[in-house]
Amino acid sequence: MTQKINSSRVSILGTQTVAKGLDSDKLSRYLETVEPRDIRFYKVHGFTIVVEEIEPSSGVKFLIFRREAHYV
Image (tube, rainbow, N blue to C red; front, top):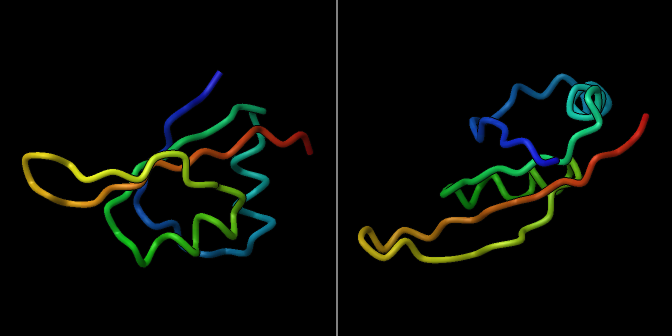
């Protein structure tokens, strides 16, 4: 099962805190963003880009990330 998470930037409380929160229910996650500056943040927290496209009506580039469930 995969759960979408809010793509708003998360306050950095520490990588372990973020990862523990993401892994607490053992679900894979995905998110979408149009902000290139967010790419590094999401990659540091284990997300990988699975889709990189241009939205046809607006011409805005968007990215979809996925993070597999990790068991802690």
